[in-house]
Length: 187
Image (spheres, rainbow, N blue to C red):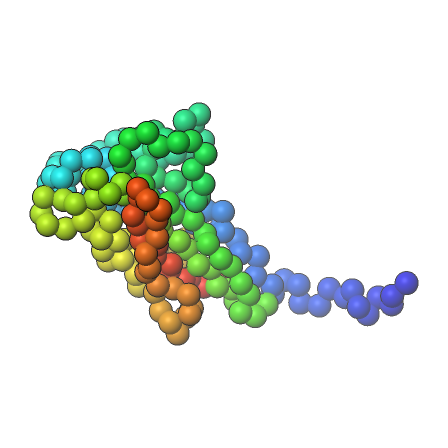
């Protein structure tokens, strides 16, 4: 029907394939496991002195990560934004996921990565006069903003890079929260 000139395969090798998109959540969680103890303590312990507890082992950190088990309400770290099971306990959650992707041109793409932090209002305040949500947000900002995560690349909150990268309020009663959007380039 149409001539072949409309379906030529010119330079298809130069198009970004967004390779590794499905590994973003895992890579962020792995980096967090290896490079931060504070976040994990605040996720595991529900007491006001959670910040002052002993660091968790790698095994204890791994036990907080949801990996498709039957009851998701028993976990604190997720690789998506869904919550199919009802939460019956006051808890703190961290959700890390690729949030948005777009092509800047055929070779370079931009990926936004979302970190969502939620804490039940009754356990949010800590005995060191800070809040769980803001402390976790500060730790994530300090660890990920402007750092290069190997296979993940450089994550940044940078308006020159992406107009949407920022930190903002999130949550729904009885859970307060913050969402952080980092951006990274893909080629």
